[in-house]
View 1 (cartoon, rainbow, N blue to C red):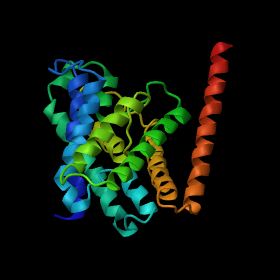
View 2: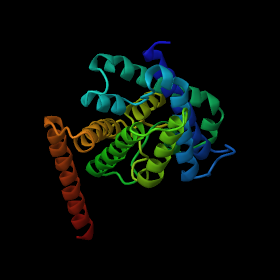
View 3: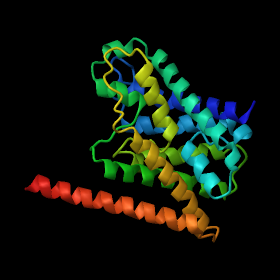
Length: 269
């Protein structure tokens, strides 16, 4: 199997199990309906675990453009392979989302809430404030890529690494997922959002394309900065990339802070 196909299949598995648990919790008349956030985070964590187990020995199972770009940025992955990996991840995410649609075929009709239907496929903010939402995705993906590098620096019993990665996803979801639904993966959000747009889902509403750049841009920034941060402080290589990304992140955080201060003052007045 090629690395392109490995990333496609691994990401497809991730989305089938991840979007599948959201569908089970959100769609009407599902036996898992209303099971809540803890089940969702566990489902995503296990989805990542199974995806990594499936193809980790072939492509190292990035399953995430933010991971691929982060590793490439610090020289841990060849840039020449980046296009194949990212295209495989995006296509796999679309296919996985389409499979979830067919798994829950009668439940789209039973579910009237357009937001719940979109939520099966794509993330959305609990409070819509784009600068703050961008910050949330940066932080979540920063922790993800840093965590993956931490895990890679330790020795585990053979075959245990994917389970540890899954626990990292659960931890991020439980601790940091509340504000935006923690995309932490551009393909995880964009691929299923494309599927939502093209699938004949009954009463589905719009695909919220105005928000769509946030979980793409935020996750890429967070992933690349997480890699540079690890490389700077754990490998002792504090190059220009680290400082450039630090400035970018500081500006985004400051913008989000000022924006929230203005919104607070406006709401009070």
